[in-house]
Image (cartoon, rainbow, N blue to C red; front, side):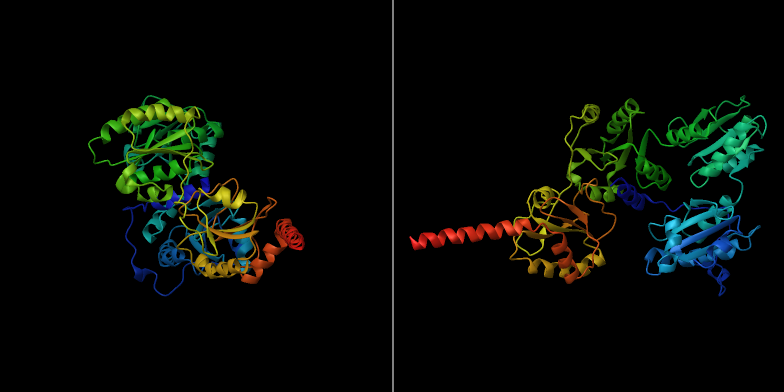
Length: 510
């Protein structure tokens, strides 16, 4: 569930970064020559092993996002081929059966997935840059250079340290020794997420104590205290320092694209996530924000991250959580295991006691569920979150349940097949064919592993739960049910009916 939440919010919070530090690329530059190198299982290792730096896109020919990326990726490849040294962009058709081992090796879980490979492929990192040609060029020029840029002047510092993003600077009396080496290794490890610099003169930096000679790490940020220092250069301590310092006390989610990287970071955090949604243009917004920040400060370091979202920018969140605008102002907390806790129509003074009650385990969990159907007479039974336990687990029956999405093409193709299967079992009360809209109902993630649609599970009458892995045909599904069902349910029913008929016959004889 947590993974699905992070992906869902990443999609609606995703920001296209702009850059003005280079000339816009025209379509004519790509012309007819292909600059993107095509790789497959036969040449991948040989070519990558000879490159200190290469970028590889894993794609599928049917993927719409891949098709949209293709011309931008090609334009970027044409420009970067002239870079000194040239930067190679390549692609692998990960949908091809012969290349699926490569896709597994590089943990490709969706399309397109872009990896930056260094040192002959020994080190791989996720590409986290823009998807337009200009943005790709700018991002990869930075990624191909040193992980940390030396700051020699005020002008260098001004050009690197942006007041709208995080920038991390190491201050050292000399560029050698354990602290400097740890900082450089750390910068190399996290360079896809942050920008780094190093200097021997703190007076060049825009904020913070200028008389320090180091070694220190200074993290500049566009929120809260604007900068923070650390003198612990152990790699684990550096990671913890940056992770904790780079998330605002209260993350703001609105239409400002500069906030979106912090929104993504918020949803990728392992902490429980407290989200306050209200209308920023309403006159009550200021007292809500003030009280909410007080609470965030109070519970800082206690495993809860805090976000405040503007109603206009939060429609994706409302759809995901099954919320409505008449519940605003509202606060919802989601734990990493997917459990949710909701307080709707709250006042500023409600926030602190409600969060404390949540921490004390006194707030009941909230479950997103469609209304229970008034009638459920179709062959395929409709299940919602509020009836999942009763129909699937407490019915004592053999249940095949489909988790689907209304927009999913594969689900639409499967629907008439499930109808036929359900009709086949209409006279068998021990078997139920059911479906649940996974976009409109919460699913217990500790029971069902739903990462794509459709996902099918079979729960036998004796309690065994299996993820369906058979053919998606009428015959295949029926064969699977017959193989895995608990037949004692049917046998008990038959025995009971036979006994009843025998008793009736005896009465007739009397």
